[in-house]
Length: 95
Image 1 (tube, rainbow, N blue to C red):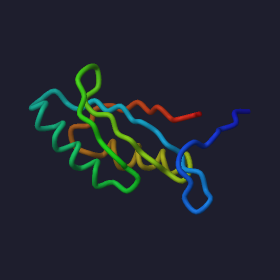
Image 2 (cartoon, rainbow, N blue to C red):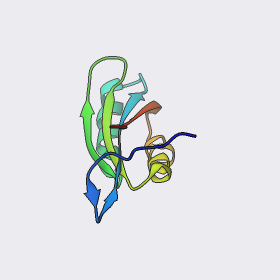
Image 3 (cartoon, rainbow, N blue to C red):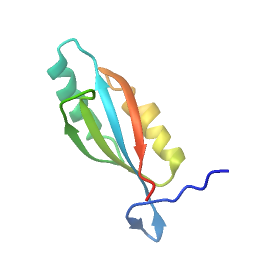
Image 4 (cartoon, rainbow, N blue to C red):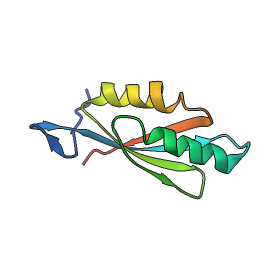
């Protein structure tokens, strides 16, 4: 059984799950997709910052959530629903 060590700032005595989510956006009108996806992600509760990057991924998103279930909902239900988002990869901070 895995034990998750929750890393991040304390909010009311409760540790937050912190993650960086790598995001690929569609290739058609690439810069427009990346720019609009970045703007939409900044509106999501729990998203702390979004960085446009060069390389295999287009965006790096800093996310904080109260637990892994909430983090999953943010990524699966909100981030992946944004037009132009093709794929995500999550890096959950462990220590």
